[in-house]
Length: 263
View 1 (cartoon, one colour):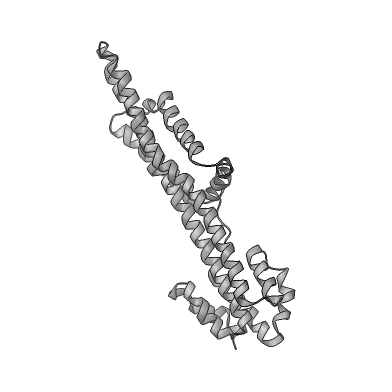
View 2 (cartoon, rainbow, N blue to C red; view 1 turned 180 degrees about the horizontal axis):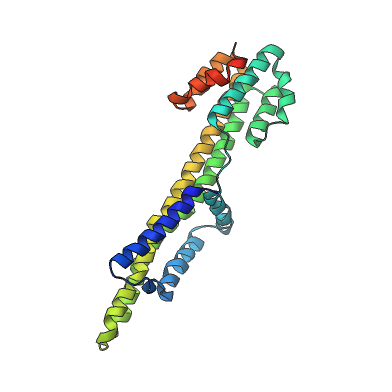
């Protein structure tokens, strides 16, 4: 489970709840069916209007990504693995990596390895892999856009809910004892809209973008590593080329853990 998402949501709910209590507002005022319908129903409506059904069907999968920790390979471990592969290639030739292909769990890396072993031109391999990365980025961008747009619409719908509530309040001016309650209820929709937009939807969109960025960085390392193996560079050259993808403070670990394959 991605603990940061859960912690963030719990902390947000506690902050709003405790804040309301400290301000003297009743938590029960939040249980406003009209406000809930305007915000959540309205946001859902805008998404249905703004996106195709095939995109909206991905929402459960996107939520799973947000709440489940992603099992991405560590950059350091991936670079060390490439250093080992290039060492094998220089000793035994590129075809010696055929025994390694079936052990690769990542589909992107496995397909790339097969392409270079099959003797495809380096430009062809680069084009195919980069095109796949671009396609992945586009899918991820569309997924994050759903939450970003929801975060844009929700606060505006909150204002709409407040207007509807004020209309109801002003139509009951003759009932002074109810007026205060009606006015406070009018702004519940605004609270829900701002909370959902800026505390839930926009941060979720941002997290999806960050996850996508990390995945793309891993794939770019794979592309450079595969093409470097194909070009026949040395283990030391491979280390120098790929170490730019990790922090300076971690680069010494490549010398320690990858020293077995150094040439």
